[in-house]
Amino acid sequence: MLKYKKIVLVDDDTDDRQIFGEILHEISPDADVLCVENGLEMVAMLDKTPDDQLPEVIILDQNMPQMTGKESLIFLKETPRFNAIPVIVYSTYQIKDFYQECLDLGAQDVVPKPDTIQAYRDMIEQFLVIPPPSPASAEHISLPKQ
Image 1 (spheres, rainbow, N blue to C red):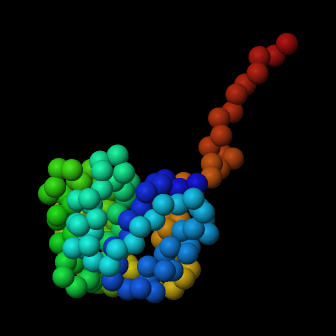
Image 2 (cartoon, rainbow, N blue to C red):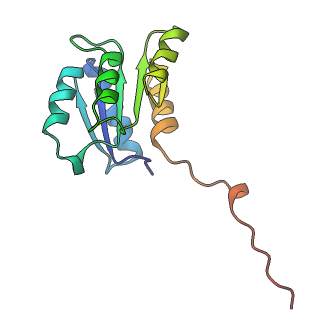
């Protein structure tokens, strides 16, 4: 089961968008995922979206033309209509300062960009899937002795 039903992926790489969509639909066939190529397309799409249909989470690639993931994050967090939407940034940058800066700007998390199908699956499961309850977390009810 997914934590979020309406998901937007912003990534300029066609293959990455396709892989993400395929894995997400394998995990949850009823997932509502919309992919756009860059931050400017995201802004245009969000501006046309009614409030009751806004995404529940946005995943941003950092390295995009026209409007980077960080620039898109700044836009989202500075716009009252969108600032409550959780945002995850992924990037090929392995720079701690970049990660911290995005967190300080309001990202829910910043992660390395997946580079294999399994890494995409792991990322999706980490951030978008509700884990099944473990037997240890189930409540134990003591029945009265008769």
